[in-house]
Length: 208
Image (tube, rainbow, N blue to C red; front, side, top):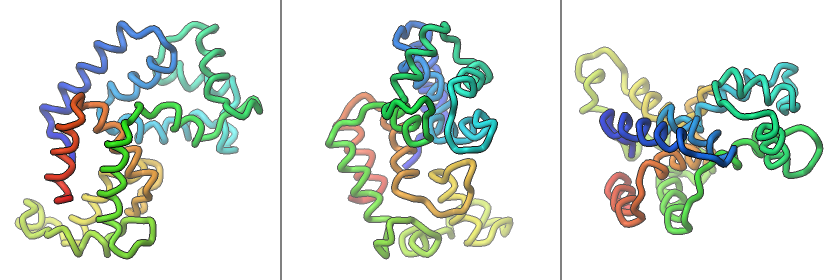
């Protein structure tokens, strides 16, 4: 399930409006990601890589500050320091990608978490903990995709395009982990206020 262009534009606009009035530094960072669309948090993985100047897969405070400024998240020095300490749960003076991502995720109700898990389990046909082209072939018919119909794409390319919706932008391997699937749906969830409507959309999309 993905939202259409009109819904995406509306979601970006709503996130920007909320960003303009948000006070909490973490909420401002989260909204700064979501203002780039429902995949904003997923795409932030690429920004993390750019921030990580010494390529140790962790961010020092100076890298963190530089990255936020580059990402155009405007926070005071005091707020940046407070935010960094808040994300650095283990208090080692650096933050890992996992710590960063967990902090950025919008809160999810147990009901929504259960639906996301159920959808992933349905797609993960072989129970490997990953969704691959082989899994998608069993449930997704590419024949009605416009680029397949025109002969522009093969069925494999259609499957890969489908998986790239959920795949990490900095690791396009066309294998979707549960973490990547979850990160995508955290963004989708943030665009839907009503639990019953989220439930309906998930069940309809994945025939749960």
